[in-house]
Length: 454
Image 1 (tube, rainbow, N blue to C red):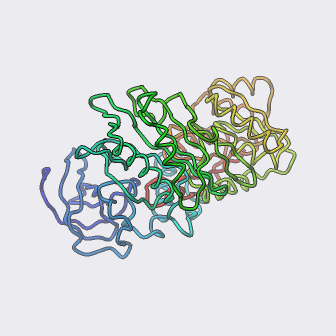
Image 2: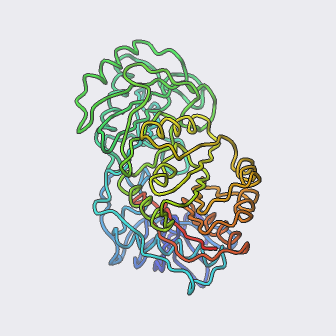
Image 3: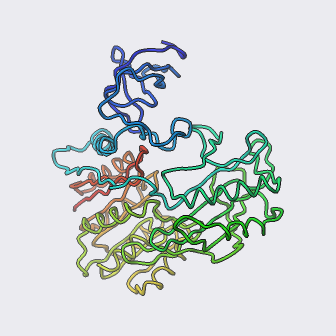
């Protein structure tokens, strides 16, 4: 077998990243665009010692789980790699991803862990309240869309069912402005130009819209004309509240630079979550799927079993979303977050919602949490909501020394959830429940709320 070969394959299973899995004499082949139950012709892309990769070029016999993709750009864009799989099957795949991670990486006996079916959406479309569109050039014109898989080649888009129509309108307005004014967008290879990305936030409940233009330069010719064009646009279902220029002169892949210049309107927009109002800036971490965030946090609060008497420690608290939800049900809440701006936002959000039993500390979790525990703060419940890399031994060790009754771990990465849960289990806790929540339909990502009891 070599790259370029075409082979016939039965697809036996689905990998966590959404690729189909086929085998020839126990040799595994991961197939892009294939679905469990398909019989496909696959073109071999790469061959390694223990596996190969391929792309489906023809479906000879379709799986009962296969559907026609809802997006004509899906194969080029790669943003929704499960779009060819029926939604109920997607949820089953995501539950299996959690199950496999806990068993293989965490070494858990699954007879003792209740793993729920993945909680999905009634309408798994237009769910994103944040859209980030890279901008570049093609054929001498400015274009915007998404990067093709494993590249920085832009796939131009005029629609996307992952987000709201208003976000696409904002992108179209900026691209039209660049072309009308003959302004070159940022050129990654040559390191010159202006606009790098169009970053759009929407308020699900408030219907507020923020448009952030991320630029390599502080000055863009006729920028006032772009602001006017955005203000004159009738956005579908949303009201423009903020236009921000973000300056990012670093040669990196970060979505935003450090400097924000408000061109029009307010510095922030607001949205509602769990009955609370949150102020959201361009840099704020705010869960992307507002409908499923409600499900995620309700699940976390339910597993925490707060009764008004508990002290809560919320590690990696961001702008205080979990902290402030918990504060309504707890005696005291302590949030820890490394990003200074997020801690300031958390304080503003607490004040805005008249919450007086929440306090926030800025610093790395591995430094602040041991310090708090060392000062004899003994939480009854700990929420852990780390980034994809998971937590670390210093933080987890400090939590173990505090002996909380319950640890509620909100995870966006099954592998690091399994690793950290094993560390906590070895320290005297029992993993009892895991509830997968589908925050990103049609992608391979899955969130999970796990409960560990002392």
